[in-house]
Image (cartoon, rainbow, N blue to C red; front, top):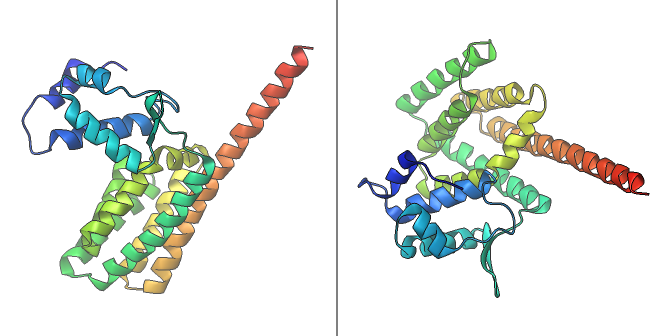
Length: 242
């Protein structure tokens, strides 16, 4: 995977983000986006040469990625990208659901005039989007979670949830391949935010669970269709080879 000159500048320019964090985020995104595939080796020396940095931040990033299960150390092979199984993704959806319910509960407990105003503006943006006004849904999703986590005011919980969201980002986005799922998902977010704004804790928690369950099912549907197609093609190839 080549790095252009603009991207390479990220590793040499001074800024407020420690180099080890930048390397970690770079490698994590590359894995989640499929740029480094399952079983592919991640060699410290080659990565250091490619990014024009020392091997120490590479080593630290790989250690963090291994603690999250995204890479693993294999004897005589070194560090390779882990295979992220269907079961693992399902497990993360389950954990994420429980933690986002907690975030919603905390947000309601800590609502104030400023956060209520922020929720009102966000709700207006989502309603406009659902009415057909063009908008970047991915950016809007980030705004939704940023507003919710800021209101919940629990940095550690926010860090854990965002880590899980990043872990399944590629897989959750797969569910949007189903026609209408993107708008349906945004409508679910809208209902959660409205319940939070009204301080209806039980309803907000319930709607959050429903949203994550629908996202999980959408992912399952796409994956099951892909598996069925794969099996069909395999059977056809076997038949053709006779």
